Image (cartoon, rainbow, N blue to C red):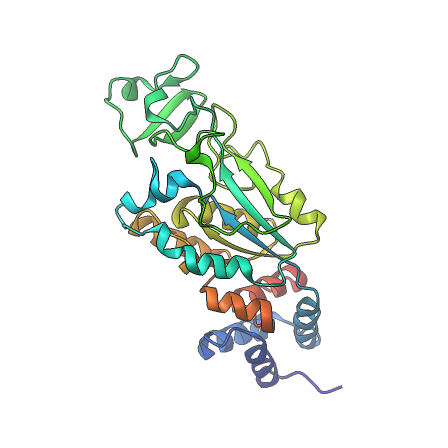
Length: 304
Ligand SMILES: [Zn+2]
């Protein structure tokens, strides 16, 4: 058996990552491995990556592509970044149509009509605003503190009320056969940005168990809004150990500032940000993001 060297590992990794990967980033990863890894472990890095490539089980999660976020009461287009969700539907449908996903999941914001995130219900009798916020005239995007339930909340216009037009997935978005659907934000007094759990972290949706039951180990996600529900869903996926990619040209975000923060969180959590055409390379040629390689060697070999 040939001895693995930094050079041979660099050229092996170059052969399996997405072609857009910067050579310097590959060299950076290999030198990190060199620093942290005993020589006898060094040769295991390649086998670990090869093992992983043989066992890719990829799910696509399309986040909240619902009428209210596209051209309804909380249209992303009206946000400060002015990104138009309708413009990303063609690449999104291309992505959804790719062969090879073990599952395609659509998450849906699915609120009761008096949901805690609706500003015109902030003073309802089943919740108590802080004294300071009670005096304010409340409007969309205000951040308030509730004494009961004890939580901070961004307020929005009423949106995605269950079983209404606004909550329906947009008609132009392709729905695959055997699709899975996950409803979130269904409880009156707690919001849910992530597809995996409520914002208080106390109640999980069925998403994780659905993915585990199909032995999913990689998640490709996209949708609305890039800087809120896509970000929280991707972050939770990565924290649960799924290798995660966000497809930026199949997503739209609300504000440039929050999009920048989201990108920071992705970088800190080994979450790749790719394009639809790169997703095609993942699905057709098993070319993977460098972040997935970092995550695999961190999970399997403890090299961080
Ligand atoms: Zn909502």
